[in-house]
Image 1 (cartoon, rainbow, N blue to C red):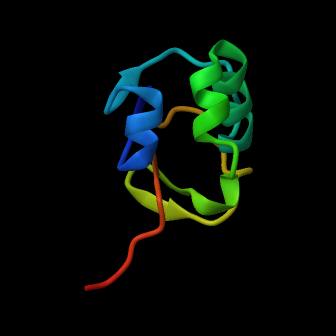
Image 2 (cartoon, rainbow, N blue to C red):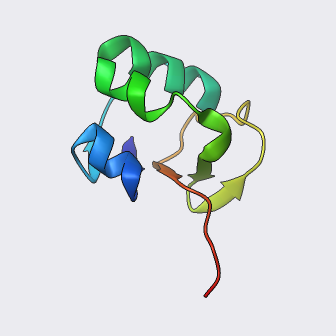
Length: 82
């Protein structure tokens, strides 16, 4: 699975994306799995309410969305107009 990080998430994690094999069933579990692997994820995801998520390029509202057989999960801060 390709996991993408944008803006300050990319800065905290240190890479724009990763290709990982994960065991998680849903987005919430994916975040917990990442946090267990390295402290940088704990810092990046410490305020999960300020992070938006897209699964296969579709914005989701519920972190319990399944990620089985998806190709891409993206994490980014809220977007603003301008």
